[in-house]
Image (tube, rainbow, N blue to C red):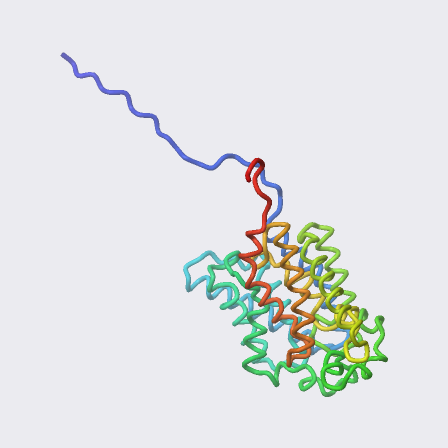
Length: 319
């Protein structure tokens, strides 16, 4: 009797569902952020000239090269074409003085990429903002070279935060809001281009790259806490608008605090996160030894991100 062959089992293939792509990509988001940063970069070049071009170009080039080298060493795909390293390098340049030494720019940008991004497995894994990590490393290791007043002695611009910290409120009376908005103040390269940063932030909100919760909560908290101090003694404490339009505040509000990887994901968490950040900015500036401790506020706010993500509405029907 002939032996009958058993039917062959069908070949099963497991794959993801054919979901429709919304069109948003990392490269697209980074391109929009770069466009939003261009006005501040132009303002930095206007006030500081080729020194600004040198710092920005060196920081971006270092960030791109270090990311490519780290990806090669880690045997990961090199993704420098998504522009994230370019954005990171430019943002790091923004928190440096225009007179920063070349080795400081290279070291800080490299540390930003290594400790702030690649050590955590490339994009999306870092629990702390990479720019704040690089800044903290540099300001603790080389405080004199990171000091804006010490490295920019050849300029007629005045650092309002240093004036307030070391000489008192009478020395900032002549600085107008127009000077703040137009970047007519001494500070880090791009952070003090307040009007340009504000314009870039509006672009990010309009394109829905970031949402309103963190910027609005941070500004509201800063204005309320700063207003409380100002109402206690206006001859000792600066107005809340002064704190909003000086230093790195606006850069943190729109570009550092809403960072995708280090900020909360829930709406309630983002609001609490922003409220804490605004409170810390005023607290550090009032009692800390650094005239502008905004980046420290960013680092400390990042510490509570996991707790903020626990703030979410209960499922329907849950008690």
